Amino acid sequence: MNINIRKVLSSDRDAIISIVNRNGNFTDEEKDCAKELLDIYLGNPEQKDYNFFCAVDKGEKVIGYICYGRIPLTEGAYDLYWIVVDPLYQGKGIGKVLVNRLESVLKDIGARMLLAETSSKPDYYKTKIFYERNGFTEIARIKDFYKIGDDKMIYRKEVS
Picture 1 (cartoon, rainbow, N blue to C red):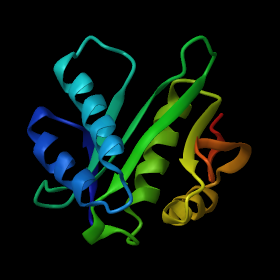
Picture 2 (cartoon, helix red, strand yellow):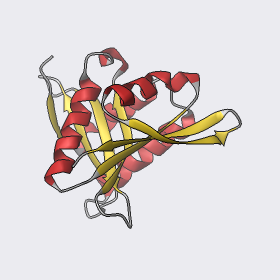
Picture 3 (cartoon, one colour):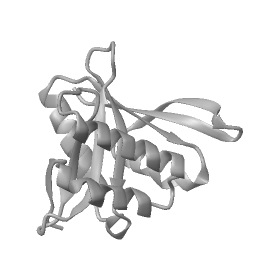
């Protein structure tokens, strides 16, 4: 599949929100959080907490995006906040391309590690597998973090 990776633009907002809304895994609260970070990024170019780039097809249609940021008070540690691929394009390697590009960007700026977290709910099993297939290792699990029976799983990938 021929895709391009570029910075997210204001004109991408509706497409990204549509992708988030059409992903069946996300609760309404998670969708609101994803939208809030996007609006912070688009609404305040001076902020440094959140960075976004997206995958677009030949026609410049957004088919996935990634949101990441430096973890405050650390040297070279970054959080992968969101990686979301349009349900119509899932399983086609778009997520892998986004992670690979992020890793390249982080290497260029001297980052050491990338952290990602996810839920242990069965709905997030594919997310767990995705992280593991893309070089992340589960380094911690906080039992019953989100709610009883829903652990927080923390993954780490070395990028230096």
